[in-house]
Image (tube, rainbow, N blue to C red):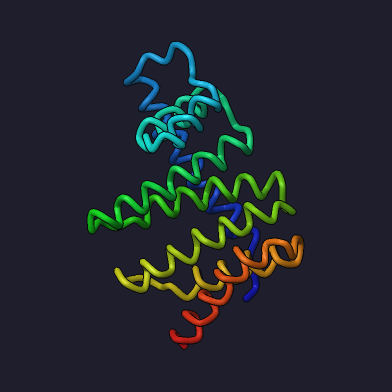
Length: 178
């Protein structure tokens, strides 16, 4: 699998433009006096208030917050939103794609971040599963998951339990598709 960074960067830019347009619309709808802190967003997430955490992270982004910690935190919220959609019998792929975009941003800034690579691998693996189940082309997502897991393991072998498990699942699923 040849990981096409230029394609990923184009996708990231396009998605960020869409998110910016959406964010501008949201900004017009709410009076943003002061964005919550990152600690407040994390507190809401840990308390199980997924919608409140998403609102907090979105407010931070609208206020100009672009730190990798914000993107990672929001990616985790997107993961939870995907799980909630799945539990309701809804299509979680939009939430998974949003998480991938946030993790793409993290990895553009910190390309050697094995934890973010592993997390993005999990997003790709779950996206592939739902593409397989709901229709789509899961092969490319499984391949992207494998590439992320392999890179994470090469950077930090201590991630073997987390990344290694995902890698095995993604490889078996891809083999099954062939």
